[in-house]
Length: 197
Image 1: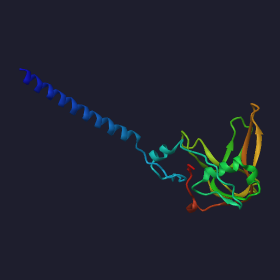
Image 2 (image 1 turned 30 degrees about the vertical axis):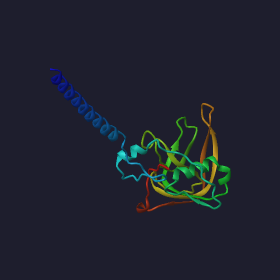
Image 3 (image 1 turned 45 degrees about the vertical axis):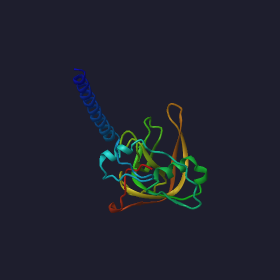
Image 4 (image 1 turned 90 degrees about the horizontal axis):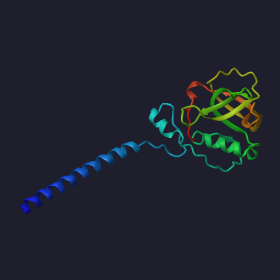
């Protein structure tokens, strides 16, 4: 009788062991599936034709880094688009004598209270929504160029900060390019409208 009881107890223990192992495997599989995503390389950008799920993964992962101030004129690069523009904004005194070349979409910006309005060259950046944040320059000194909203343009100019006060009395700083040259690029030269670095 005791031997029979011990056999049943051993069988129950073995069953419990196998059931717990199966549950652990299931939990591990689910955990891996939930956390798996396709990371993009540092300083890469998401092309517009990529799968939306990849674009979703990179939203909000934007990390600004400090770049050394170049000694020559600058062409804003594809792989560090937002980072270079952010550095110009934060260190405007070091960049004021540099000539900047940048490509992006031609757009028009208007502050919610009407206190500021300007044309711009920009690209969409990462955030909780696809295009609720952007990187680029406000532009002035346009000389009657026949440019339409969303045209792909190349702008050459000198950077500066313009300060404006909104209707609530809050001062805002806007990064501008004093345009020396603006060129509408051919459609086949259009690059990514969405950047992450």
